[in-house]
Length: 399
Image 1 (cartoon, rainbow, N blue to C red):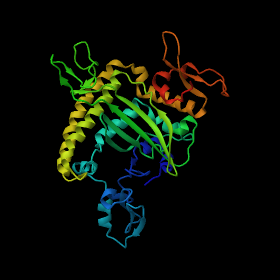
Image 2: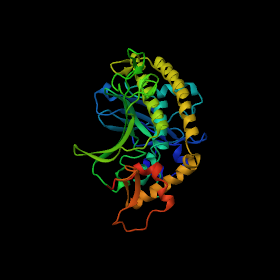
Image 3: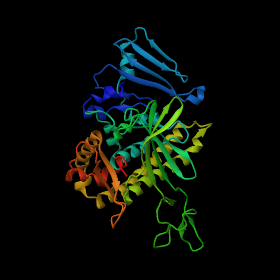
Image 4: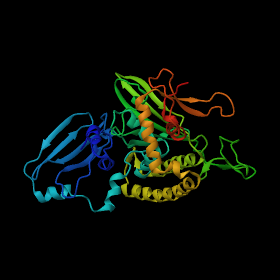
């Protein structure tokens, strides 16, 4: 197991292959096939079962050719460390050998909490946060150079609201506080929260036969049907916000908040598809839970696999739309990484703020500029100004 700081010193390829451990700040590092060391997470038990305040964990670490160490953290937070006696080498080799049975892997990824989203939707959301929101820039800029951070998610679940809403938390290995990207500091524990929301109401036919949202009755297209919808679900008001929350001696404080993410039509369709798919997954999964506990793992696995295939098919249309409408010279992976580097450097250097044009035909258009009191008063270069279209929302508001 690695801490975020230990993972930071790895090369980019090694760091990218580290796996965040759910409910902790640690990462599991993939080891070579010849390695005889590693961790095996034996169980993660819901705190609600034991009446504790957190999830209890039990993991086994190989500490030698003949021995293993067992780490136990109770739901009340008590920790215990045990060492085995001399064990069979064959048994330990088998326990810590890389799994070749890929068919058994999905069983470990089944959501065991009601309203929790499956891995394929978590992965799609993390990908969206990197590709369209560029959230890794904030995570990286909040750390001192040359640290680089990626977007990994911890808990992701469907919230119980009138709309279709998903809440996710960044894994601690990505960031527990992005306030440093704006030059702010807070005491106490922090967490980075992502909220995504769309209408989510099922379209109904009116007396003229048009399919419309029962809430957004005036949001219609030229044909008379609902203007924005996915799979018969209204997707008006699809949006995303990222906020940093802090708790210092039971006093809650809100840190940096990013709520002006510029989304084009294709971005909104992708986000809406993700949210609608989350609502359908959770709605269909309710029958596999009793008292908020999954009681039918095989049924849940089948449900997850079927909806995963449907989601992949739906996302292919969005991917094709991105390719048809976007400027590849701007949105290519290499071009965006170059822009990420520029944005990180500007955020770390401080003194660059986001503004909007207040008058004229380009009113409300955002732009970036150095603060008048900034030490470096030279204007932004043309290359630095190019990131406005893709990264402006990540900068602190200067108006």
